[in-house]
Image 1 (cartoon, rainbow, N blue to C red):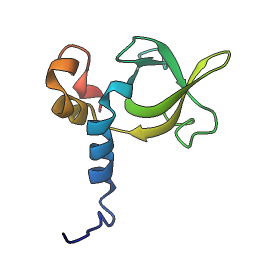
Image 2: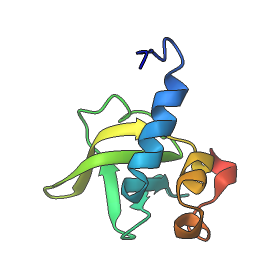
Image 3: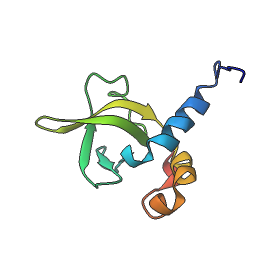
Length: 100
């Protein structure tokens, strides 16, 4: 099997991460906070994240760190369409794809 690289096409890598980690998705709310789509738990971007100053509409996270708040760590920016593609039955009523 020939090895390949995505080169500068990081969207393909992000799409793959979205497909594999869709259960750990969070959505930006109108008030600027985030809500984990699986548990409906309020979550925040960890201050050490490069995404801390940004407000992406959808992210997937690798872990939750519980301190005075529940922080998402190891984030990846994803599109809502990728989450719907990965698990349409799971996200059918949970997503607002126009935000992506």
